[in-house]
Image (cartoon, rainbow, N blue to C red):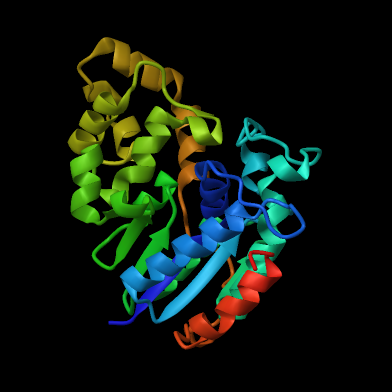
Length: 283
């Protein structure tokens, strides 16, 4: 079975920009550490996974339709508009994209209110029965997509974690198919989504394993024994449903590339290296 590598572009960019302590400078004294880190990590992942196809998806500037559902969605994220170039991860994005072009890796910036998560979910929905799929990101939202053919690749160098169905259950105590429901209950600080008061990971796991997903839990409120949990769920029905709508990845975004246009040519790596090194100012 062929392998499809789907990369959450902004996620890897931020990981490299803030995760590499040494600020590597190019010939013009501009920081290039995120470029070096991004490409270095990607090439290591490619060597490990040996994918037949690769797509890198970046969040575009159109924003997310999820804000219309909940204006607080990701409102805690930093606005980089007026941040100086040396402290701005987006200052290195153009060179990363240019370098991906040299290696002939397809990349895309989302439009029309979709996020990278949505496009990645669409590729998973379309090809999960035909290909082995690896999603590169440390965003746990993707755990809901994990199944027998889909894994989440959390890059950490030698400490990389690859989540399959078994590892998701070992780590969180719920099946991957119900992970969105789990997060809807406990909330997600990174996306500025508040969970249900008094419902932490242990309680959420217990509820899900006993009743199933969010809708089944809400239908069984009268059967929940603990009065405090029954009350807090009843008081936060709307919040839980909205959270689920925001977290659930439905795979309804259009695909930017046909799968045949995403085939990775391993012969391009060596020939493109010098171009990348010169363009980024490393040599």
